[in-house]
Image 1 (cartoon, rainbow, N blue to C red):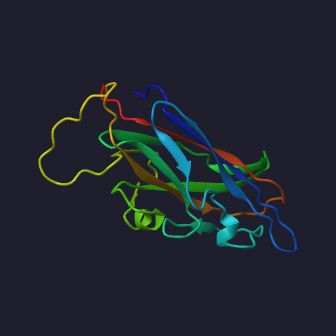
Image 2 (image 1 turned 45 degrees about the vertical axis):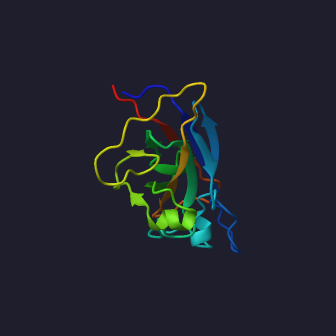
Length: 201
């Protein structure tokens, strides 16, 4: 059972405008809400923009634009928290981006995480673990533990002690399409990403 939210990320997909000339940008923007001591920050890029992968997206029966994990367009979030604790990430995604009830474009999202205390986003992406397609939840430690016997339990929080913190990376990517025969306009949807410390009930 999911208990209180620690963080909630709203991802709003904006745009998909068709013109005879260059296509105006459509992007995924992030808003963050934090509680407890988990901090979520935007990385580079901070938007998921299918137009950065394919400059012109035209209405048609078969065009699909895919951003993969290793593409530079994959969006990046960082999750900072207590290095001794696990976090659980939940991602709720729409099945389509909508202009209105009659105009919808299929969309699918994937995500991956990296928790080997990487120095930067490039290293993090090389070490990332992809969550299998169709899954919308992943639980992992903020800092991946080395093999071997478990260490001593962490020191409990107190007024004279602050647990060390580490940063894990979360990458969001996916596919838009097939576009189909739809009208030009602003297509949007919302992806909710929730991050919280894992509760052992």
